[in-house]
Length: 178
Image (cartoon, rainbow, N blue to C red; front, side):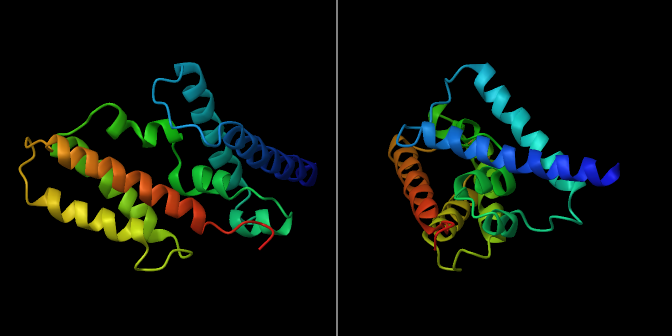
């Protein structure tokens, strides 16, 4: 019986990866929109939590989601990033720029988390653009006071650097065919 439950969980893991990848591909090319209905963000958040629960329960059987996706020849690098590395919906990840968060104490924790996540990725070189730019921003922000705010020019540059880093990251992700 336990074997059947594990097989069912593996199928569910495959389904979660495919579902999230197809959801991602459906909106490919569209700009992240933090104003998307709460229900959609909530549904994606629930999918991420479900995925994390499944992958934790299958850790001994599936120690690496990346290898799992490669083994089953799944082209789902964006889903792997969202479900394994980031762990938050893309709309949430882009909320700082979209909500015009410009105070250092609002921006710094988000950039710090992003920098830490990027550092954990072995597929990215140490001099990867996103890692370098996030470290530069963290240094810049650490020299400012918590209540200081980014100027309009700084906020635009940060948004540009985030978008540029994101695009470079997506281009750096290996596809199943390579």
